[in-house]
Length: 222
Image (cartoon, rainbow, N blue to C red; front, side):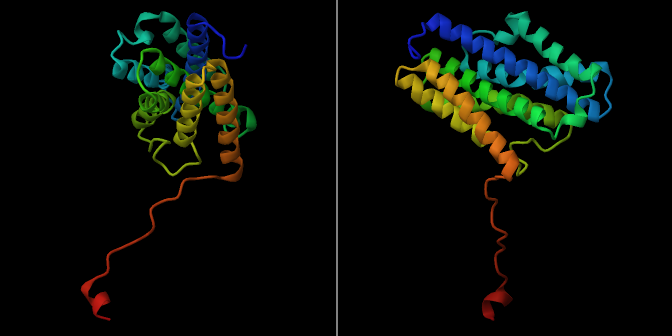
């Protein structure tokens, strides 16, 4: 039963996940815009890029028609709605609390699932699905951070972020191969949210490059 959804139903679920990620990331972009004390236009620019950037990059790379965010106005409206929520309500005081972290983890996971699902739906292979699922999840945030002159979260030695997107995309691909896309959607989101929250709680990070420096000729002589 869990794996028996028709392709049309899977597409509808994927769209709903995509839009939920758009809303949450638009809101997260608005939170950062408030922190920089931007005006309304700045809020909307940062929020919409945050909400739509990853999906537009994904759809452009798929070369499967015009990016959906530019043909389905629901996407822009949902991104703007999330941004305006952050504009009218000061959510920045809650950015270190569980609700904010949960929304962040949820957005990351649902976008990775949606990106991998869309890539598989156009007939590309598992590696492309993992790659584009990850880009969908982190692309908008990376573009947003660059616009705000911040080191993108995926490069800044932060607690597990892009790694979570890679894992979630892999789970979606595996379950799709096993003929259980619904299981992949649910398992991907649950695993992604759990891992991201655990990383935030226990400060899990990927190892950095060792502080290695080549020795000088004097060092070698001694």
